[in-house]
Image 1 (cartoon, one colour):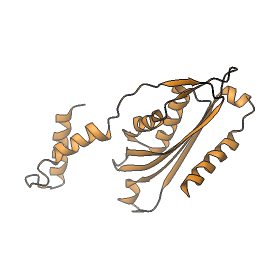
Image 2 (cartoon, one colour):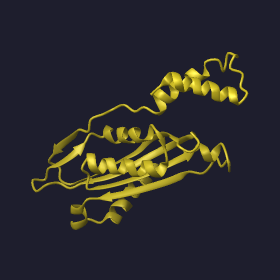
Image 3 (tube, rainbow, N blue to C red):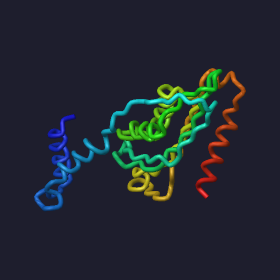
Length: 196
């Protein structure tokens, strides 16, 4: 990432819009905006996927209200909201199951949110990563966000939210005595109970 080049580009962009960069409020704006994009909006902290083997049997694990802070790749406007993730892990014949640390769900959301994004693509990427890296047998991701590109331009609708969902299940889940629709209903029941 070339921060100096980015800073010059933001300066040229503001000057092209007839903004006076000599005043105290705009003088350091190119530097501040570059730092914001480079260090906060487009950078996530790397992490290792860790799992813990536990003799608790098959487990349905849901994590709700994970913060989403991203940028729309079309207009560079904020995408902000919440991610809710439901997962199911099938135990082995000894009743053992490998479960990830709970904080890893939030780290996955952060990994895919901190880039120029589309909410639909981000929902799929989060679901796919959890499915593959956590080896979950059922993954359901529900993301609910407000979009700056809808509230600050065009239609200027400040009240609308956008919801996207994605589901992945393993072959052994599909061949077992499991019902994805029932689990999704349970997921939304949990979400509604804690939202009251």
